[in-house]
Length: 251
Image (cartoon, rainbow, N blue to C red; front, side, top):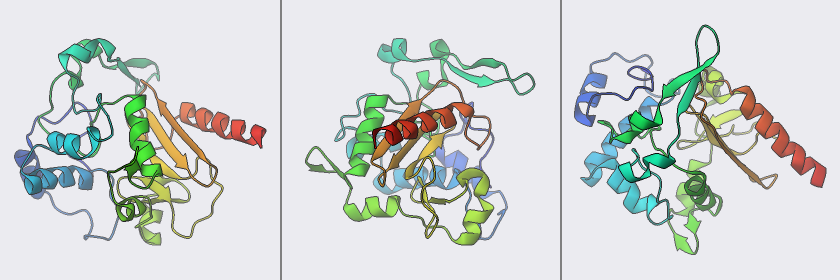
């Protein structure tokens, strides 16, 4: 099981009903045999809600968003901020021409979702995103305040897959890619020097982030064009080529 339906539009089911339906499906693989993208994080969000006894967004706001000053990050956009929101586009499956995927005026994000999706339904800004990334780069500390333990960040940014799991997930992780806790990371024992290097992830709504600690570079790109394949679009490749090219010219 990878996901119950496509990532958009959002599911109409609340957490209890969503996980009940998931529980009726047969396993595609034995537990631990394969790495499967997405669904594990969706399940984790529901389990977090049950463990802490509060909505996932309230928990994230208390533990992450407020301490990091992420004032524009949530599972939906409040009415007073919708004028800052943008339209999302996606290529037409037959012609390749861009079409409107989600209009800002009546966006899927203009109202709270039935299921707060921990696999990736947060809306944010470049400033908020950068605050989170800075905290990860500082091994859990942000502006003198401890947000996560160093051990947690180290485990987040370390590869936890076997060689067999990585090989079966090459479409998502690419050459030399492993998986930490919600992040693509360099494969354990893999070759270095790839572009982009380091840890981060490419989001289906058209975002890419990598922090390449070895080269001292972090790049964050937010676009309005949704991905239609696990393979990165040309704009991502162009972005990273230019970023790494700029570093090479300064050395």
